Image (cartoon, rainbow, N blue to C red):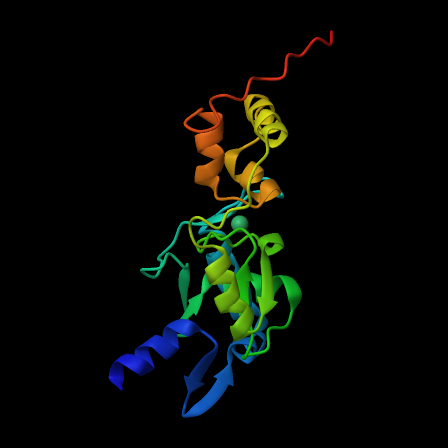
Length: 187
Ligand SMILES: [Zn+2]
């Protein structure tokens, strides 16, 4: 039981204060503005902010599953849930915050979407290895060209809905070796 309670605290969906149960949303918006500002500053100080479409990785403490965590009023809050709440203003306690990019430690609000428990498990299945979308020869040529031009692996992974590792395999020619580069005859 003790373990269950600890797990619940980590979830960050609710917090107890003087015996009252607060929703995660109420915890943040119920704070004095000055205290909330401090939380917001502590949050962003731990984020590696990248380009708009890139993953913004959490540099603070994480769970074993690599979800960012931040201590707020002695409660462990999940960083991606806080990112979603700060961006959208609301987060019903029965909603999960899902990663469109499949990177647990990413807190880029553009990569986060609220969903139900059922969507959460479907998302986890979809993000499992081997279920990546299949790339075609044209995708491979475009990925290599864009990467050579400076587009990051993460941005490409997001664009093609595949894992960053898949993109890396393509750009480093560990896979798709037979695909020849498109010859650029322009200029
Ligand atoms: Zn991301």
